[in-house]
Length: 121
Image 1 (cartoon, rainbow, N blue to C red):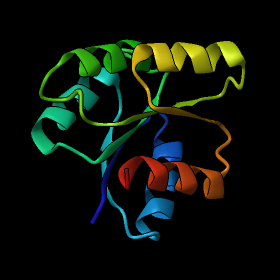
Image 2 (image 1 turned 120 degrees about the vertical axis):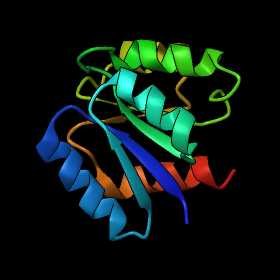
Image 3 (image 1 turned 135 degrees about the horizontal axis):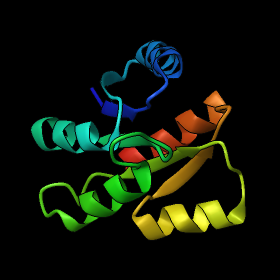
């Protein structure tokens, strides 16, 4: 079973996304900020991280940069989640180490396609 880490500080968004992905037979881990995300990544080695970029404590941008510099984590694909659908945001996410980008509100069928593409390669 594919394990996903959802990093989202908004509990309602995190719970909704968790339920929808569990119905698609994904195992779900969660974190509420970038610091916690790095800890969960080190401990559980998820197959993919869905990273909100605007987080408390340590934002998603910096958490992604740290993960991509860590030999223990750099192999884990990161998918940025942000409310900003601008080309600059996509470029910034890729620069931070993300493999792909999804905008909020989430287009769930498109998100599933992206998850499958990143976890089956």
